[in-house]
Length: 359
Image 1 (cartoon, one colour):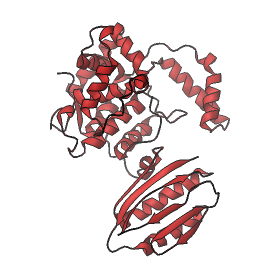
Image 2: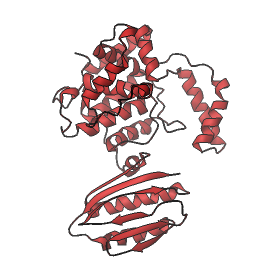
Image 3: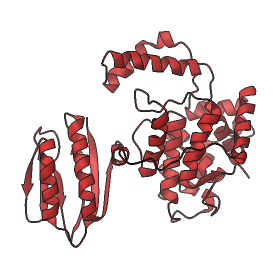
Image 4: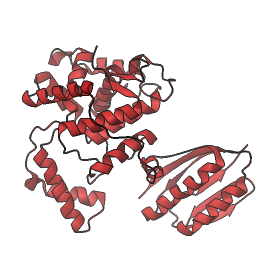
């Protein structure tokens, strides 16, 4: 198990390095490491010799550092997180992240879920009618093209149930390593059989809205350059384009699809359509990021990593409360469309996002 932990913050004036040292030293019994203190820093030196030291170095009460941790047990990893949680009250602000997305989910694990699951409103029932209509009508040629390009491969409900059955069988045998699980699942493909078209309630509506937004009337209208240009203009993450290389389009299109849908088909807290709001709008940046990864992970089973921020962690917490997760961490949705949409709209309401469709 390995990941990089990033941490930065500013100590409160009333607190000092001695306070940090006191908390860190109490946690050493749960971490295989030695503790070294100097005038301006506290260093945790891991005993396995595989990990870099975790250093709390302060200049003007501020720290900004990272640690590449390659430990033997998840218990030590979680003990490090426990230490950061206890340290947090010492700081005016303390930001902790990791490249696997474990921190956000771990930090809220003992707290009540902030998202309340609720029934669909009368307006949202119209969304359900679109879903039911889609169930009666197969996707047309353009929809099929966009779905294929997105890599959101449809699975039959029976196939998903078979995956769950296989996972249960693996767990009963005590298999826990992700790579070993993946290998064994591949060996069971003959039992699973071919996937038949089963679309999550959201998938076809996302695609249908996207087709209207981008104005795709024929297969020839599907232009990667135009799609990339559109998402660059949206500045979804408020930074320079990371999608300039057209050769990598097939690997990023599923993200672009959801970015465009959120930007054009949603309003934020009655302030206006997402695409028209400045990135500085309070809470908008983190809500967009949570929606992007939450939709693809929870509802479309593609993003199987940890949470990208605390809002997505709350989304995953709600889903995990009612659903089981797959072998690689993805949430398996197997309920009826109305149930799935109850989860979706409850989560979007928490993020301040409301679906308004294409104008």
